[in-house]
Length: 347
Image (tube, rainbow, N blue to C red; front, side):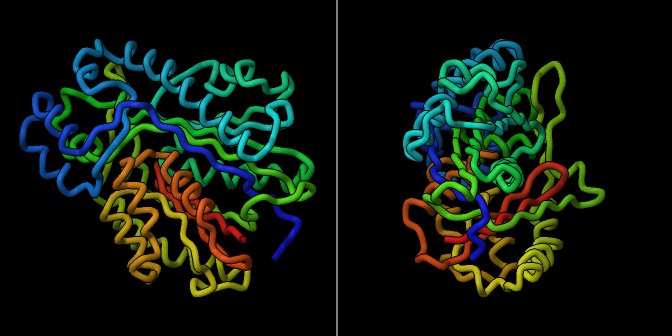
């Protein structure tokens, strides 16, 4: 294993206190979407979700301005909790953080969330900030990859990734499209923070061995937002699983081959839970064992799809029960673009 690579020191995931079963969430939306959307909830693979607000508050939101103000308020609270928890777990002081990568795709904040949290948490005034926007579900893996890139150049430094997604605040009450029904049935709210350290520091978790980014041609409309006066209106095509089936197998094979590996050398998979059909597509195209994506399915069932936070939740669960030393892991996520991000991990 290459010992000159950065390592993940800690991951923390935080949720808002409002936890609901899928049945409770479905009943609350009957008045908004009508009964015809219920079948999407039943097929989502989601059992429970945490939401930024109590269910009864969503019908009271006056529009995008109030929803976005709420996003900033709740996101700062969750982000601070996640950041403090990850730094404590890594035994890293806030003042020792050299760069913070932040990502969200469910609200707008200028200054960004990381800038608003810097003084509250105790980051240095000269901390470097790398805000990411627009990557959506892929951003958790992409953020880990960008920390890897930075720490390869600065091996004595510490990087932090902060991801906050409050998907429930983007719900469109007048949108009766299939995409909106699917989104309402799948997405939940949460925040995650990852601490990574350069190779000059002792590793506490898996090393980040290599990364690969892939942007697919003519797929801009597969996933994303239409942003207007009502806020974030979901674009979500049924072709997400199809794109995964078409490209992912070759992408993973080529990525691993470039490092002298095959899929059989990888024992642990840290995969974003896009939804049941996407999980099934990933499992089939990579010919994985039946239990290979159990942590992914568990995250989806217990939390819903958390956008960029989800793959980090799966990483947290993997690090809590790690594979044997010498094992290899593969982080996989896909998102708007349409694109994918692969991260090779080594224990």
